[in-house]
Image (cartoon, rainbow, N blue to C red; front, side, top):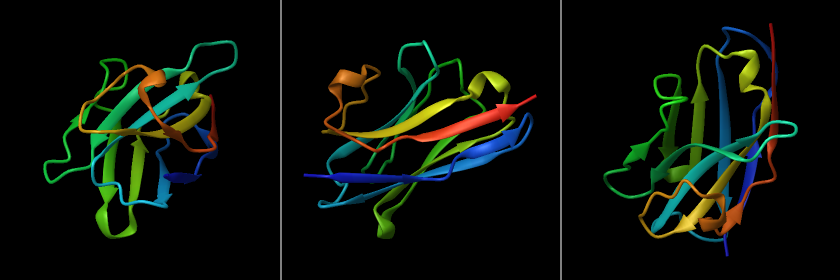
Length: 125
């Protein structure tokens, strides 16, 4: 059983950068794929990227965020990060990290087994 605790987020201005953290406990993240999602008010949960927690730490981003979003990991801390650059008001949402067993990258949220509590990111114009 993996527990995910998120930190970071808050109120920022357009153009700023932000880094969200997702720390795992209860199990090593070896053998998991870590996904990041966001959900804006009244909208569906949206996939914004994933990282395979393996030697290759392969990442994947949808075109909508590619170039601005970067997922990385800190192996010794069992923590994954989401770096968001050049923030836009439309990035305003609750951001979630999630863990999926295995090394496949899924864009569907129902393929993920464990979820963080979510963190609010608000971008003012």
